[in-house]
Amino acid sequence: MRKGLALPGWVANFKRRMEAAAVLIVEDDADTARAVTDALVDLGYRTVCARDGGEALAALERERPAVMLVDIFMPGMNGSELLARVRASLEWSQIPRVIMTGANDPMIGVKEDAAVLYKPVDIDALRNIVERYCRPSG
Figure 1 (cartoon, helix red, strand yellow):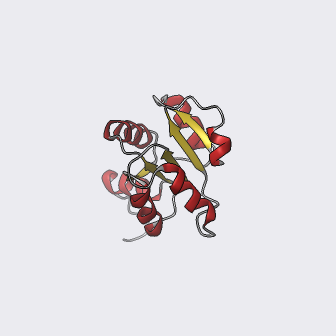
Figure 2: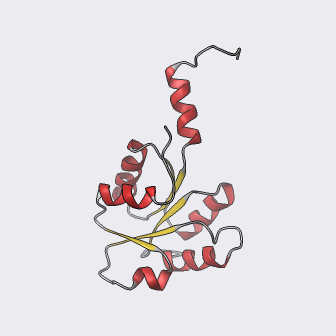
């Protein structure tokens, strides 16, 4: 493309979206995953979704997200097991981790060495916690 030519709007929007910070959402409940994804996309973030810890590890192999939002109670590899593997990894241990939970356990963030976002997820709380770690595209 020659210098000085403007990109069509849809191309510019696609390019901005691909450059946006990726947020890895690990959630087995489809409705919750969809709601969180929709909210983050509306805020300008790019999302990658996984339904359990195994899918999340595969996603981490493909790309490094700016932050991880992880449900604790999932079938297969649960959130606690996933977070333990992430913490033990030299490659992934610096990725910020946020637990999404409906559990009323005030110590869960301490136990898992992660920030906590309580369900049902409040959009303002979601925005605030994700913005601690990354910025949307712009």
